[in-house]
Structure formats: structure tokens, C-alpha cells
Image (cartoon, rainbow, N blue to C red; front, side):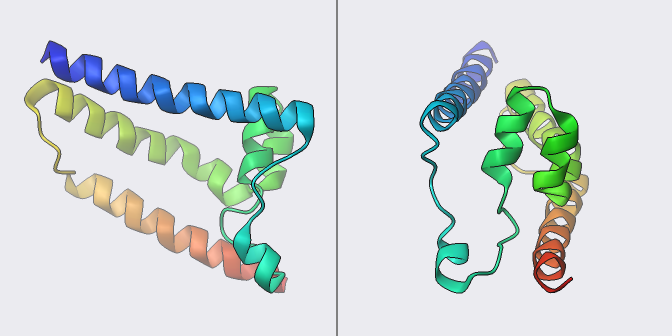
Length: 123
């Protein structure tokens, strides 16, 4: 159990540190990874604005974070619950299989993000 907890903390920390370093880099240089869908089609993908949203969250500017990608912003809490639920189950008993409620949240999130991606380009 302790080994699995250390694994989760290590992986999560690495991801958070990488994101923080990327955010600092973008903040100071203005250089970010461009969206390939936007570059090739001119349409915003469901994730467009995610980098700017994360940068705003790093500054605790929740209003602006919401404006950059409202759907993704609203899904942060449910997706965080899915991650947390998976992490707790893995630490407790080594289970990697998600529960039904986690699948429902993930699939619903995909549908909502895709729908938002379509709507934001045509309204």
C-alpha cells in the first residue's frame, strides 16, 4: 500500500511540476505549443484555451480562466474527482479498473467537450 501511495504521489508531482514549469516558461517567453487543429483548420478544438486557462488558474484569476475555456473549466472538479477516486482505489487495493460513475463522468465529459468544440465555432 505504501509503495502504491509513493507511486501516485511521485507521478502526480512530476506532472504538476512539468505543468508548472511549462506555465512559467510560457508566462515569461510567450512561446506556447500551438494547437494543430486551429493551425490547420482555423477552428478551435475542444481544448483550445486550455493553456491560457491554466495560466489564469496559476494566477488565481478564475473569471478569466472560465472565459478561456468554459466547458473545460467546469469539468475540472468532476474530472478531478475521477482522478482522486482512481488514485484512492489504486492505493487501497491496487485496483486500476474504474468504477461505473467514473466512466459516466469521463464519457459525459468527452461528449460535453466535443459539443462545446462544435458550438464555439459556429455561434
